[in-house]
Every structure is written in C-alpha cells, then in structure tokens.
Image (cartoon, rainbow, N blue to C red; front, side):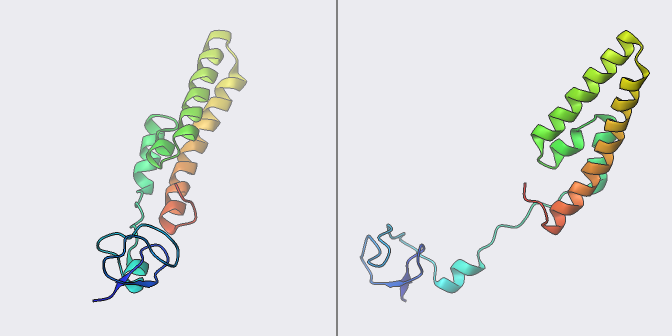
Length: 123
C-alpha cells in the first residue's frame, strides 16, 4: 500500500522519515489524499431554546452557552451595575436600560444559536 504525506499529499516511499516534497516529518500511518479530505470535525450544535431560557434567568448566560464568554460576561456585568445604580439613586432610565439590555440578550442568544447551527458564525 502506498503512503502519502499528511501535509502535502504527495506519495512517499516506505521508511522515509521526512517528506522529500515539503520536508515535514512523516507520520507512521499517513492518510491518503482522499482520506485526508474526508476527515472533518463535526460542528457543535447549539439549542436556541436553551440559550434563550438561560438568558431569561441570568442575563448573558445564553451567550456564554453559545461560546461567546466575553460578550455574556459583559452583558451580565452591565445589567447588574445598571440595576444597582438605578435602585440606589432611583434612576428609572437606567432601570429601563438594564431591562432592554436583558430582553435584547434573550433575543440575541436565540438568534446567535441559530446562526452557529447554520455555520454563519464560528465560535
């Protein structure tokens, strides 16, 4: 059986430690070019309903579930800070802003899950 370089796909002789074409180290069981092309990593499927429910109970949790950890933590931090300041100072506008951010995070986590499943967003 012929061996092929896992890096460039060129046919290589038995017993060679480095590919004469590209210079990469030869793996003992190199894949044929056809095998190398068919090896794929299956994408991780995200459930939009779970993302929305998580964001409903904890602002930003749906984004964290989707793999957008920075965005989720930012939303959580902002909603908490806005709410605390609004309660302490009686500022209705900040409370409204926190509520809008929370509701928006529910919608965004839902739609982001759908986009991840369609392959439009890589996480």
